[in-house]
Image (cartoon, rainbow, N blue to C red; front, side, top):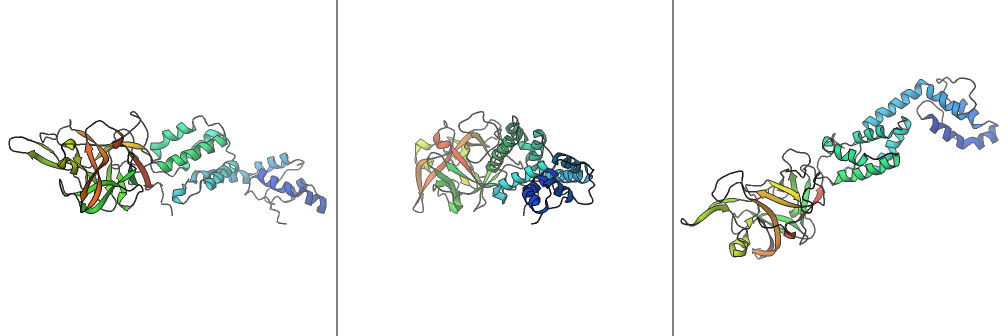
Length: 372
């Protein structure tokens, strides 16, 4: 039977509890109590006072030795270095929580507020300053270790849903259930003749993946953050193109290239062509259901995407420019014999055709340090 000695590298209470399992064996074979055997198993470098006749006195004596102070401080240092790694990065939340609780126990950190701080510092996020408010909001009414762990688990799920700068996303058109797509080098036959954009397939595929860019911000807030969407396969950005003067010498105006259906039908006159390679490609977003929604952009958020035109109908670049929204509808056009569902921009009343569900495909660069 392998009975562990006490040498200061385990919490005294845990060690005593482990030894008590052998009480019957020692009494029967050696006619010794568990307490007598425990005292005999303390390393000779640890000096015990005389008169120890209870487990409580043994525990107290072991905790008064300098070895226990070093043991606690070591576990505190390990807590400070502990980093949470989500499952998407090869981590294990259950293993992390078990490790965290063990270190708190060993370091005798029982205060909930102190435990909150260690958990907060364990989050290996390079955008940690931005999410601190969300963390403390969730932890505000926590008053027990069980509640703390439950809220942390919920928060860890929230972190995996955040759209981080340069993440790969897909945009699902809510009304039709199809994904915003483009095909490299397949171009419009009218308008700008840039790479066409359409919605296709109820599942995201290689042609419907986009890298999202927040212009050097780590996270996008529902407060005017501009974004760019770069098509993964072609490296071209989603945008619109300025055409210049449109019409005759007598009557005309300055404007943008029109969507394919605009060229064919008067009903769609106001619709602007959307392409990959458009020279204006900065978009803003807002929650489609909640006008005053706050917080960060997350996977499965349903949003409206808008773009502010650089030029007005006089060809002037002013601050008071027209804003148009990204739309798709059940209207189709044909190129090379293939049929595509149109995507365009418009300045009409918003409706279900203007709703997009953003899906996180791959979160980018979550950790402070390189995780192998």
